[in-house]
Amino acid sequence: MTNFYEDKIILVTGGTGSIGSEIVKKLINLNPGIIRVLDNNETALFELEQELNSKKIRTFIGDIRDKERLKRAFEHVDIVFHAGALKHVSLCEYNPFDAVKTNVLGTQNVLNAALDMNVKKVIMISTDKAVSPINVMGATKLLAERLTISANYYVGERDTVFSCVRFGNVLDSRGSVVPIFKKQIQKGGPVTITDPEMTRFVMSIPDAVNLILKAGEIAEGKEIFILKMPALNIVDLAEVMIDLLAPKYGFSKDHIEINYIGKRLGEKMYEELMTVDELGYVVDKGDLLALNSEYHPNNDNNIDYNSDLVDKLSKDEIKDILLELLDFDEI
Image (cartoon, rainbow, N blue to C red; front, side):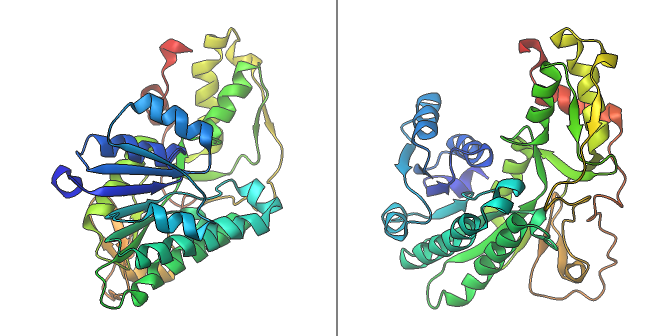
């Protein structure tokens, strides 16, 4: 992978977020020419710049809603990782106009700027919530996917390619369930879960980013890359976190209660990595799957795409993941 990104000028939108910043950190080790980090969070840009302290980094204050800013930022860029988005289901549900402005119109701005500036490759970061969406966030990300794939029909004589990466919940990302549970346990509980039957696909931030970079390398245009990942029961995750963290914060395991608060507006009981109709268009790429426009009638459709139907991680497996993910010595 090092040879592919070497000497490239790369831009990451939403570059201070959980995924965007990890993309930047991974890319630094792949000897790129320059990494441009675009975000509208001035403080986060400053902190990332101070943390990395690298001559490879250029921080750009800007918003993907701003067409003119994007044109300047995209000059001479080879590869764009488009991670900028509004991602929280509940916030998007109550702020739908802004979700559309960022996730849909903002994505369209990114695609247009890439075409205008003759960027070689654009990878849009999507979510499993774009599959059969029941909430505003998922619906806007579905549109963002469709816009990105369809942008390949606008390239004309350019050699720009547009592809997407779709994956599930990223453990320990900002606003995700792991830091929420952690704070609740630290306060002595209760840990709140919407429904005991809820399941999710999960992966760590480093694993997600490694596969995003792999997708960036192999993308030829029109693909939606779907990262393979395990699923778990949310209640199992909560119980394992209580077992691990309660003693660290001076509580017995029995002290921390779990309260079921009911499913929230726009929330799914389970997630899907693809629709049933998409199963016929899947190509197995090892660590990831690729959806493309070519139908494969001989697919056996034996793909773990529904978090409710697949085998779930055991509590011991969840514990191993959390021990690797969280620095318990510093808690």
